[in-house]
Length: 131
Image 1: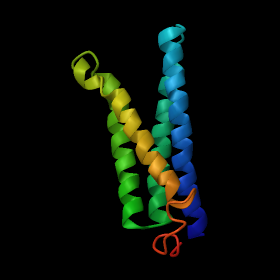
Image 2 (image 1 turned 30 degrees about the vertical axis):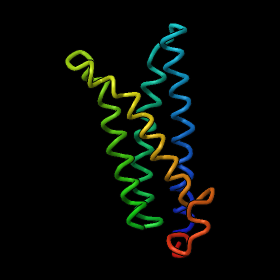
Image 3 (image 1 turned 90 degrees about the vertical axis):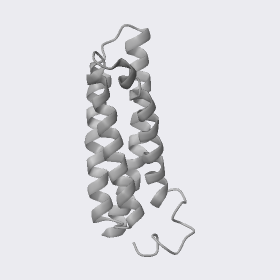
Image 4 (image 1 turned 45 degrees about the vertical axis):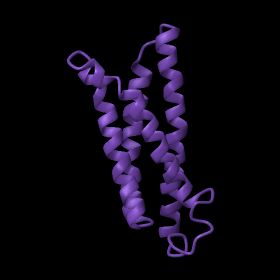
């Protein structure tokens, strides 16, 4: 069961990366095609919810220190990133970090994806062998 949870943990990491790329497209539509930001905003909160699920899977599945730290980091960075547009009127310079932190979310999620799918743990005897 832990092996399945570990694979789900990594799979959600990759899904977050994919959805993050979709987010860049959606914000491009809003800026350049006059579309609403609602799709971008809604998917963003969906991604944030997935980060919480990733953390739960890190605790239930692999249970390694590195996986739990990555899960916590993903939730914390995604939470801060999601809150930044709300400070746009008071601190525009701070809100400007929203897309920068989006890249950090993608990087952390990609690292999570590589943990049990795609090779990072595959050649080691550590985390992969205990799953």
